[in-house]
Length: 288
Image (cartoon, rainbow, N blue to C red; front, side):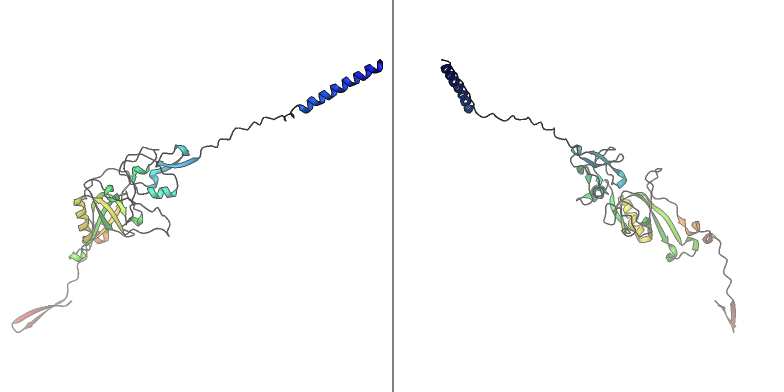
């Protein structure tokens, strides 16, 4: 009896073990546990900074731009206006001598549509104010202020004449100078409306002609003055006491400048003379 129960118990345990094994074999393999991956937020690069040209002072319409009329400011690249000039020597060279077509406030950007550059068609005609003309005057290193005259400067014109060829016997009145025009605007130097900006001895080029903005009557005066003598240009200060634009009536002679020419001249000694009498005729002979 005992043996029979032991055999039954063994069969039950064996069947139970086989059943558990069969269940494990029938279950799908366990999936590997996945670890969640957390990515770091992307790093945002700072906005690129760009240097832009702006007006250094209030610039009125018709201004011929110089380097000191502009300065550079740094702004974000996405904030630069369309058509603005970025900083650098290339932009300065492009704007140097350009004509402003509108008023520009200080620290306001200079836009391409606001300027008329020297190479643009019709620039010279646009530079001239209504009722004015353009006339060129020949200059050299002395009469042209050593090549330091820039477009946009204002100059006076001094005419110097040598009257010796006209038979003037007084040494103090042989050379005369006079101001024939005052406060005349320079609009071009040689064939360049803008200054090259070169300040080295090797790169400096002495101008041969300077183009001036004048009225029709002033243009006639300049044309006649070029035939009479030598014209010198005198650069005026940017800011000063307003003066009349017409010619000055006073003349400056050599005797007004040099006291030696103003001193009285000693009379020349009288030349010896001889009277020749031949019969009833007389004749005086002067020995020189």
